[in-house]
Length: 193
Length: 193
DNA sequence: CGCTTCACCGGACATGTGTCCAGACGCTAG
DNA sequence: CTAGCGTCTGGACACATGTCCGGTGAAGCG
Image 1 (cartoon, each protein chain N blue to C red):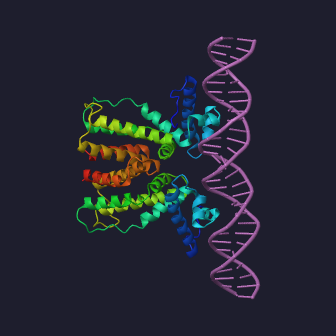
Image 2 (cartoon, chains in turn orange, red, yellow, brown; image 1 turned 90 degrees about the vertical axis):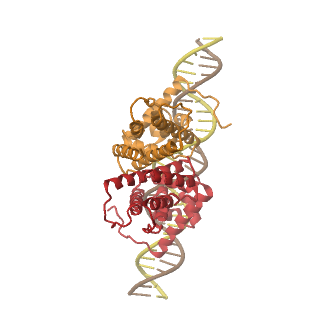
């Protein structure tokens, strides 16, 4: 039995989880990535460490959850605006700036995304699928969600996904700032159209 | 005084370091990334943990050093072959397959590269510069090493670096295998020329 | 040959991670 | 009012990280 049997959180539990994720952001903002401890976050959230561990299996899981929540909170891709290129650039910029408000948080996310425990893996797959779908929606907005991209579109999509992940990695390593990264991503998108 | 005063290793020291980096590769191959412990690596190398820590400040530093050594061991970029595109693809494939022989090692490298301690930062910068230079050399082989790329070349170079880092990240996260990743990188390069 | 120096040893230490469990707390229902 | 239930607590645990330091053996020098 590897999957949990209860799949929904009570109101109170959901609140605890929210307090934890909020506290995680504050903590990394206040003390940086190094001072970022599960126990510190729990204390900031006014919660016992053991409680934090009942909702998150690891530090990486907690950070990944923050990223995932921000990604999921984005509004649907707007199908209206003119050229595909512009829409793609907009989507890229949007997801590039997801965690850019605090560089330490972004570095934490990049690193946490690489975690090995099952919960991180699960979230990672969802995140990958979500980004893929958003870029695809920007590329061919009028298609059904079930429609397959042409081979050419698949290649462009692949290139865009690589570019996004690469930009995230570069920023996470401190090669460049996040604002710069968003601009360079736009340049890459322009090269591909 | 932040920098060490002795800048060269004795024969014996160099040997100890080599035993450690070799043992690190074997260890990650044998027990995976999770069982990868500085103390385990030291034991495998026949060395005391304290000794390992005199040469590597952290686990991340050790892994990063492995990556750096492999990168530095590559032969110079061959200026001869025909099209720039082919040379670039060759360079990309070369550095993509650097650590591909064992996926666990690659995941370890990707994660370690993000470390925050000064030694990792230093190596990271060197790695970034090296990759940049190799791609540039493939792009315009006849130029002096001091020559600056044109704005257009700079954009392509930037896109290539993003693509490489993104591919590494994707592979590190287990989205795809390394062989697949190398092929997709080639596709990206073709889109850019 | 004896002495110094250099690299390595081994073990203690403080801190963080993730797990576990008995028990305390407050809300709700009988 | 009180019993039960779901949730959180506090602290112990095993293990990893990275630091520190007194001690040891062997190579190299006078």
